[in-house]
Length: 268
View (cartoon, rainbow, N blue to C red):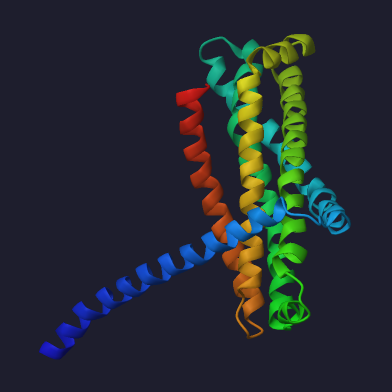
């Protein structure tokens, strides 16, 4: 009986210790990987052809789902804003809350989530397949740098295309909000767009772009890291993809809170 009680006490402590050690070990490995990838971005020769291919796959490939996300985000946000503004008789100012929430928060976060689900998972699966097939080891054997050849183009493409997709998502969301505003509460188109432009200060716009750029960096970095660190078995592809998407989603939400806090203190 005493042995059973001792095991029940000891086992959770052992699992906790193992979790902490694994966490810091993974964090250290990720930090080294991030440093090498960041240095590779600014070190010639640049893989422009591969980068353009990745930009097409990430940007053009993710455009339909990002556009749909932006449209329904604008429709739902406008409907919810009408419910809240109607109680104070200010439905004509529907453009103001839409302008702030979409550009500052919802646009960057939701667009990045869609890119992570569509492109981030594809990057992780592709690199995991290469790692399991020993193609990455073959690159090292022939003297090539896998980070320079595989990671840099995908990371740069994510950092370029996520802000572009976020901007398009914001614009489409405003169109969705315009449709609800003009059809449901009969707000004039001029007043709707004018109220949006009143709140879109340079600080708000730059804040949204900085968020999307940061999220793009996280998507590319985590997806590449998860793919290249995949296990040797066939199940490693699925595990790497799942780990990449979950880690990216949590990182985006945590960074959104952190950046919002910084911007409120400094800019907003």
